[in-house]
Length: 63
Ligand code: SF4
Image 1 (cartoon, rainbow, N blue to C red):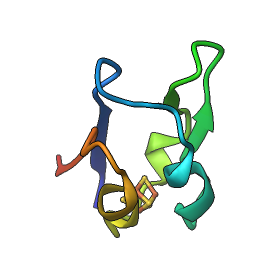
Image 2 (cartoon, rainbow, N blue to C red; image 1 turned 180 degrees about the vertical axis):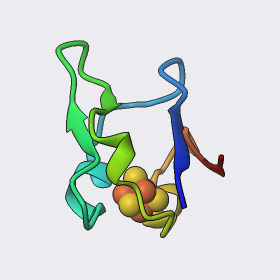
Image 3 (tube, rainbow, N blue to C red; image 1 turned 180 degrees about the horizontal axis):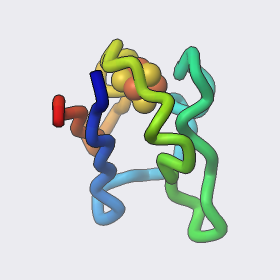
Image 4 (tube, protein in one colour; image 1 turned 135 degrees about the vertical axis):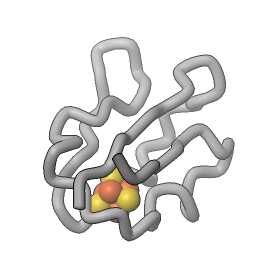
């Protein structure tokens, strides 16, 4: 099941919780200091990143 992984860069504060918790390494910190879903194709839709994000900046949708 593919998922669309979206981050709101306006609200991401770059604390990296999503990078730490994602079991399939979807996230990396970008040069802008914000999280970037560089491996979105690997997302399994667990929503762990959504739960830990302190600013509710991540959205996971089935596609
Ligand atoms: S939903 Fe799960 S697998 Fe997908 S990016 Fe978030 S933590 Fe990673």
